[in-house]
Structure formats: structure tokens, C-alpha cells
Amino acid sequence: MTTLRKRKGVFRLTPKSFHYFVRGNTARGAHFLHASAFQGLNRLYVLTGPPGTGKSTLIRGLADRLAEQGQQLEYFHSPLRPDELDGLIATGLKFGVVDGRVSEGITDQIAQVVIPVDFGDAIDQSLLSRHLETIQSLEEKLAVAYANAYEGYHAALRIHDEWERYYIDSMDFEKADAIARQLIGRLFEGHENETPVVRRRLFFGAATPKGAVDFIPGLTASLQRRIFIKGRPGSGKSTLLKKLADAAEKKGIDIRVFHCGLDPNSLDMLIFPDLSTAIFDSTAPHEYFPDRDGDEILDMYALAMTPGTDENYAAELAAIQARYGAQMQEATAFLTAAEQFDAQIKSIYASAVDFSVIETVQARLQAELDNLLEP
Image (cartoon, rainbow, N blue to C red; front, side):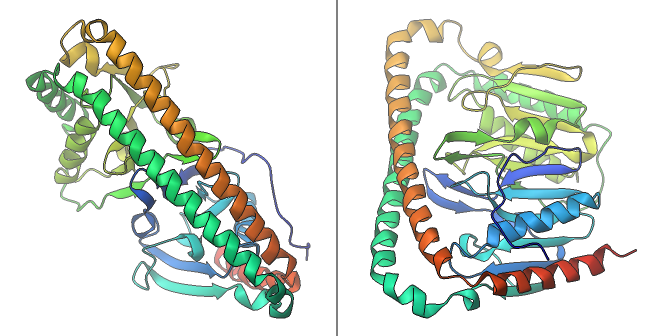
């Protein structure tokens, strides 16, 4: 068996791979969507134990094995290190694996079979014992860095609220409601059915130490229709998405709901798999533009806002935007510090790991996975 080692590099995007975040560093603290993202599986392995014991590496190894077999995969990335994985689902097999140390909402009811796998047994406690004070100190610093990052993102959100108010005061809400009704009719008419729908909630992006990261291009690449919502803060983009989501659920139309990585109470994208359609907030920090047939722009500023709003408040808006950008940079700096403290903690644990124990766990999971792959 190949020695277990850390895998790095770019994840290859294929028609059978979909990349998400399932936890976020948000203005409302750490936010978790595992209960929705991992529901309905036949088998879910929950990896527990300290950091630095190879959980993400094992998940990547299983992903590579499944990809070689042509399985459709969902990759769940770490918002602290987007090149590492928090979890994986093989959709056709209804098989999943998740890092239990960084998850919430994983219960025995989330899948038909939930199997805990403890990596703690791989730790040589005698080697670790000499580092306990250092670990405690680093964990305290890590907690403070996270708290400062979340406080910083919360402050940025409050500035964003100021930004929104200039546009909300110029919004024609009757026009916005009419846009929503027209879009619901155009997208959903003729597709209604009686099948109960359960929203699946995910993040397409996250605040990371490297700034905002998103997977919109890959998630929408195979869809026939993409609607790019343009506008300004407060121009009704998230409200429109919420109305569409409610209407889809009532009409029995399957839906994927993507929450905002800064404010998880807001929505940034909907995907309707059966309609091969995505509609999403296409403004910074996830700004994209149409580049193929089936793409269209829905400009809420042009359609539902008093003309000249940008010009009338240019100085005030520029000042708010500058404050917002500076606050986001400050919060990101704290998140960068958190990553550095976390890396030091992982390194200490890794120095005390007996990786032969981890390789035994890996071999067992690979064997069980091979059984599922047999025709």
C-alpha cells in the first residue's frame, strides 16, 4: 500500500465533479450546513480525532479512487485551506465521508448508517505530552484570532447595511415584486409536480485567508441557462432569490440553495437541476459576466431603482465602499493568523502520529469502498 502522505495541487474540474463549502467563516460566526448537505446518504463515515492526523489526506485519497472509477463526486473544501477537504460524497453510491472535528449537525439520523472512525488512536501520547502547554497556548491564540475575524466580518456587514440603505431608499418595490412574479412564471410554468421538495443548503464560496473563493464556474458549467443578477447592495437580489426558492418549493421543483458566505441569512444562488438553470448574485466578490449561449443578465438596478442614485450619492457611496474594503481586509488578516496558529497545532500533532495506524484505517475504508464499487 502507498504510504499515506499529504496531497496538494489543483483539483481537476470534470463534468462529474462539483465543489462546495459546507462551513463558512461569516459575519455571524462559524456557520455549518452539514445537516442539509449530507442528508439522505446510505453510508457516512465520520472521521474524528485531532488535527494533523491525516483526515483530509485520507478523504482526498478516497476521492481520487472514486474519480478513477468514474463516480460523480461532491467535494467539500475547507474554508481555512481551500486546497484541503472537509468531506466528500459519491452521489451514485450515496456514500460520504466527513471530518467530524470541523462539522456540526452530523447525527445518527443523517444517513442510514453512520460510522465513526477515530484517528485519536494513532497519537503517541508520550510524544504529545511534552507539547501540551504549547498546544494549549496555540489553541487560545487560535480562538482569539477566529473571534477577531468574526467580529471583523460582522463590522463589515454593518458597513454593508449602511451601503444598502442608500439604495433601499431608491428602490421601487412594486417593480421588484413584478420582476419576481414574471421570473417565477417564466422559469416554473409547466414544470409543477406533486413531489415533496427538501431544500439542499450549501455554500458556493467562502471567506478564506486568501480572500473570497468561489466555485460558481464549475457548479454552473453544465447548465443550459444561467441568469446573472446585477445590481447594488440593497437592490433586492437576495429577496428575489428567496421568493424564487419559496415558489419552487411550493411547486415541487427540485432546488439547491446557496447561502451568502458573509451573511448566511442571505441567499446568493439557486440551482434548479431539473430545469438545468442557475440564477445567482453576480456582483463582487463573485462577479461574472455572460460568455455563452443561454446566459442572460437581470439588472435590478436598471429595472427597479430610481435612475441617478449612483450619481446622487457618489461621494457617500465611495466612502462607504472604502471603509467596507478596509474592514474586510482587516478581518481577513485575522483569519490568516488563525490559519497560521492552526498550522502550528497540526504540525505538533502530526509529529506524534503513528501513520501506520492511519494507513490501516485507510486500507479498511478503501476495502469497504471497493465492495460498494463492485457490480
